[in-house]
Length: 185
Image (cartoon, rainbow, N blue to C red; front, side, top):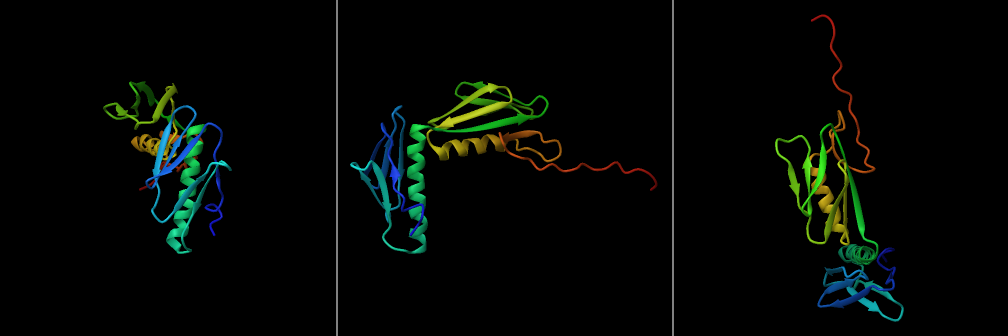
């Protein structure tokens, strides 16, 4: 039995969870709505009395075991997303490298001839508290992580000077540059 899949997902106060037509619908207290079409082999049920969501699988095949834990984790992430939300912080390092908030997106000046405008998907917001910090927030964990990865991909940190866009606590492995070759030829 999956150790993660067999655990019931608690439903906090103010969160509404509904299962219909092969989809799980979660609505939060602030009005955010998320939906997830789960695999047809999984059985998802909401226990209103115990305020939990349970996920069950039909057999112990390898594929259904993997789906069991995955489905439960995604539902738990949806519930956490509508209550607390998710946030990714990016730091920009390099002389002249900066970000500015533009409309609903972020405009990056990271050493290219032109500025790069990144527009987030629906349900994701971008804040720029200072020119070297980008904060990406949203209720959907996958969308927040994907957009953060796309912003980082514009100029990933390079190993020699460390210039580029990185996650806030990311450690970049630095390489030593070429040593000056002195002397005879």
